[in-house]
Image (cartoon, rainbow, N blue to C red; front, side, top):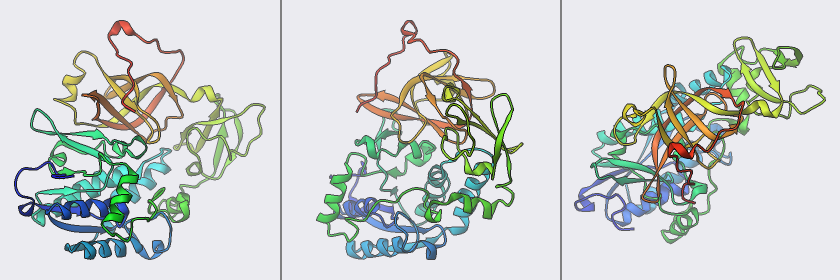
Length: 398
């Protein structure tokens, strides 16, 4: 556990700002670094109306969590600051979430929070506090590369790996970020919390969307986007009206239950047409895709993304959901932007989700970057293994 930050010099001369959410992970991060002698400063962000979330299980960055973070800081004997980022969070995360959902997408607000709040705004605040580095309790690893830059790698424990939510981290940000828990399991983290005598050792993890009371995201969207729940039609792939709905924000691509229509065979939501307020349904096979169209690419692999696909395509491993294992595919230059072609295909891929790229380096899974999904192309035929093209269809480490 010594030199968790992978830095040269005396720990006592190194100031570390730790983003403390009030949970066990960030608390243990602060405890590890304080025990190693670093000059640790804890910072907690108040991101939304904390009054509504004080007693809600699974919340974070509000009410009870701020109290817990302060208690841990006192236990460790480190300075602790609470910063009001509520207006920034609403603009960069909540409003974007509502707009994206109302537009028929399935956004991932945790990515926006890390991208815009924690690794942009908070990182700037850390610099103002004189920090040499900033550390968080994310389960992901940052390691030095031969080039002198730092690379981002998947966590040791696959079930806890948070690389899907951190693909938008930039090279400049990586130079100042550290993740001491990347090589630990959750069980080890809780054991350390008990060893350090932290009151949050058995606190449950945050769940779902932190700023949505009781998980009712439609209430948040309707409040912020009047008209987002306007009624519309449910149609089949040919445009035939099968029924009606009370707002496309109540549906997601791949959904089967709750359609409110009777049919001879199971129907799934294939697409959401926000402009015409239509929910398009069809058979399960219509959900299958192998070609994913991307936007807003962030590349943190070696060199530039242009050079990476200079030969026409680049072999990558792809993750299109946080809970799914990466699968092999190709990153290619499409019409106007980049695309990913999956070997095995995938069901129910929705615009707004993230598509994250990985590469296996020295037995480790490095994050190469990723982008947001802007569309998909239906899968019409199986993809061949194409071994003649030199693709090594090898799984990432377990």
